[in-house]
Structure formats: structure tokens, C-alpha cells
Image 1 (tube, rainbow, N blue to C red):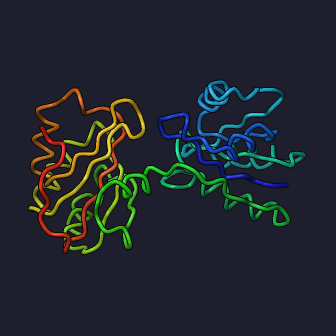
Image 2 (cartoon, rainbow, N blue to C red):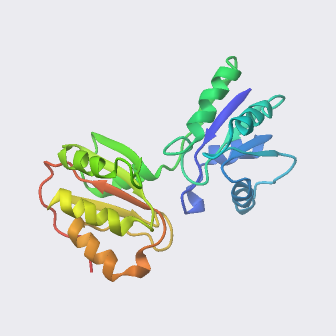
Length: 238
């Protein structure tokens, strides 16, 4: 039995790899956050839905649901684990299933089918030194939020985080207070038609998105430059 951890596109369907498409075609069991989303993706990629079995496994899954997903693996030689977009287990509940799968089926193997990761994609276009960075996932809504911003301000290396459109303005306000002129980059609507990657200070980016409310949509990836990177001239801020 093989569990394939399959990376899927975060926007542009052309980012699917040949290997990922092959694995998804051959898998007889697909574990996904949202089974409707993966079926839609497979259809768009011209992959037959066939006789595949689809099981939902996500952050809100109960212990019983997790156990049922594990039991569903019996009898399947090729299993695909996917998230809604990007690489499973990266700021995603997939890691819990993978860990339990290893315990339940110790003779089986788990292999990565690498592809798109919003984290790495954002770092690659930031222009900041990428030899050392820390990914902290989504910023906490309440508990520990201010403590995290204080730590970000005191950290010398690059920081990468996710944020939702509902809290991006509030987050930029907090980053303005703690980062000063330290530059950062925002990746928005990555790989999609209206993608953008403005680079500037948190204050200028706050002003930009405050005056362009039409752009406050989609998922955001924030890349904070290393503290030793120095000042940065605004890029694509209009």
C-alpha cells in the first residue's frame, strides 16, 4: 500500500506536474479536505472520476471520522492524499492523517509527489535572501497574536505567514507598529489572473490595500525580509 502525498495547483491548473496527474489517475482512493473540490479539479484536468473512492479528511474531522478514513485504505494499493490547493500537511491537517497512517500500516510507504507550495513560491519572488526563513502558518486570531508580532519584530531571519482577506488590514496595522521600515512582500491571488507581489514597508502596504479595497480578496502570503536586509524601495505600489 502506498500513500501518495500529492501537491495540486494553488491557482493555475497548468502548474500540475505530470507525475501528480499520473498518480491521481491511478489512485483508487482519494483523501481530500473537500471531496467536491477534488472531483472538480480532476474533471478540469481531464482525469476520469472512474470508480475511485473519495473520503473527506480535514481539520474538523472527528476521531471517528479519522478512523473511518484509515479503515477505508484497506484494499487500496495506490492512495492519494490532497489538500484543497498546494502541498498537503503545509499549514494543513494532512500531517495528522499521515502520522496515523504510518502507525496503522507500518509496512506501507508514504511518498511525496512534490509540486506547488505557496510558501516557497512567495519566497522565490520576494528578492529577499532565502537561505534561512521561518514559516509560521496562519496568524492567530486572538490568543498569542500580540506576542507573535513582538517575536517577529525581534527575529532577524525571514518570516513567512498566511493571512485571510478578513484580517489582512488588521495584520498590516500590527506589522506597521512593530516593523518600522523593515520591508515585506505580499503575494496575493498567486498564480491566478490578478496575481500581484508588492514589496514595501508595512505602512505603505497598509495604505495601498486600504485605498484599494477591491484588492482585499483571496488568500495572502506575507514575507517579512530579514532584519539586516535594509530599506527597500517600493515596488508595484501605485
